[in-house]
Image (cartoon, rainbow, N blue to C red; front, side, top):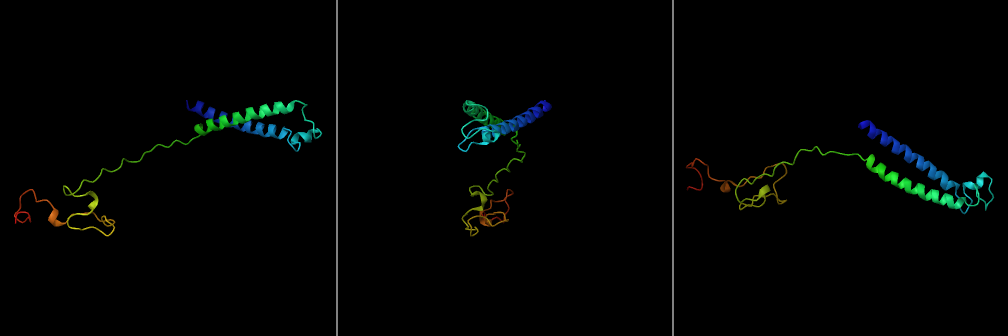
Length: 147
């Protein structure tokens, strides 16, 4: 299966290069205002290199090659596009507030213990003042809420 995919990639690239080369040649052979490259083949200023009606033929060949060029370019864009797979770890879970009812991230509490920027200082965890900590589960006699 991989060999078939590689074959089509190489085939489309070679076909694209062939169409590019043919498009360049056909455009240069067309009779322009200055005579183009067709004048180099012995034709006089008003004559075409391949006969009288070649202008229409070269115009149609140019249009067809230009359309084929664009089609192959779009196909090659999707064929050769680099596919990246995100293997990043999932984002860490949001931290729950330390105190029920307190704002997460250490933003403004009743004690006014915030840094000048409005949040916790860089590298330091946000902790509420001791007066806002919940009472110990054992019911110790030294807690401020029992006095």
